[in-house]
Amino acid sequence: MLVLAMRSVRQRPGRFLATLLSAFLGAAIIMTFNALHDTAGQPGVDPVSSGTLSTAAGVVGGYGTLLVFFAIASTLTVNVRQRAAERELLRCSGATPGQIRRMVVGEAVAVALVGAALAVGPAVLGGRALLEVFRDSGQVARSVEFSFGPVALLTGVGVTPLAAAGAASLAVRRATGSGRERGRARSVLAYAALAVGAASAGSTFALSATDAALMAPPAYGAILLSVGCALKAPRLLAAVLDRLPLRGASGWLAVRNLRERAGQLAGILVSLILFTAVATATLTMQAVESDAVAASGAVKSVDARNLETLNLTVVGIVVVFVCVMLVNSLYAATSYRSREFGQQRLAGATPRQVLGVVGAEGLVLTVTGVCCGTLAALAGIVPFTVVRTDGVLPGQVFGVWLAVVGVAAAVTLGTGLATARRVLRTDAVRAVAAAA
Image 1 (cartoon, rainbow, N blue to C red):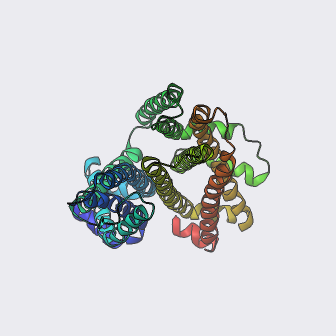
Image 2 (cartoon, rainbow, N blue to C red):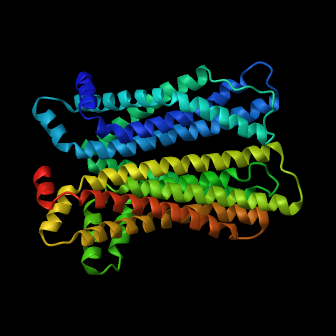
Image 3 (cartoon, rainbow, N blue to C red):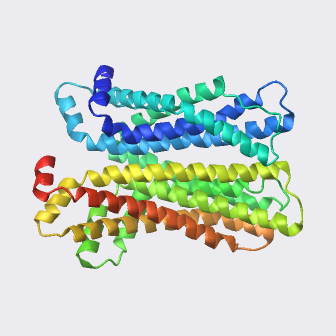
């Protein structure tokens, strides 16, 4: 099956471009930040600089690994579902489920290795630029020299394929496993994340305004609450669809399509919820903290500047990966509907009406994801603000929220409509015949 996997990658490289892009970006980020471990471990580096570099590498490296896993899992889930006919043909030819799983995992690992190899050069350049940022901000001494060594290389070449293998195995299990078993496991994980997230956010009230770790409990609470909401994405979408007051042919058809594909669209909702919650909560709490320090007339310590840099970096990484996941998932899901669009046009629908359906679907997904992510973010923002400033809802949240929603809507609606417009360029008869 491994030989078959290699042939599959060589014969149809375009199918794996989304996975390659996710692996490339993930490996680049992982190696860029883990190069700070190599830099911190050099002889002669002072303890303050070493601590700053090691903390940044540890925190962002961990986030990067998780995001690589989710990004590759998102793209591979769509890929595996679209290859249902191929999997069935292999089963009829005598392949076992284990062999099919090994084939998909082999494809993912091969693509991830290529992505990791391509990311070495950009990671070296990114590591140098990142060290320069730390130098300019005074967090790292000017005498520290950049080093790209075994820690960065081994984590990039080792972690990325391992994350790809785990994501591929998960994608196959999602596509071929029992829906009841998946639903039960998902519910248990969702309720556990919600419970731990609520406890973490609530523990903020046990801290004082001067505690250095004040931002950690509400931030982790918001993240865990968003994960819990994301795991319940199919049910959340179904609940929203039952109460939608959409009117007209496009609205009715959009709701019907979303009901039929609620499970397949869960990955898009997961990305939207996580992006909204993490970006809104982190940026708002950082803005509140910065304004509180400025109002007191105090000077930010090295630890405070390190935390601010890490927060902004984590949000930047989340934005990049979520955008990649959204674009990949939406592009794959929309381009796969060429036969459906062709049938609608043969039934009398105009291209404008088809685009209206796609736009309505994207709007519903965006509103659902943004609302769930906003609630999770507020669960962390409100406790932090109450303890830090004695307020309840900070004024900074509105500007941050509008920016986050703007990015989410632009990526979701823009990708869906642009892909649908491209698919509609194909003649309706040819689209139906080619997909039949």
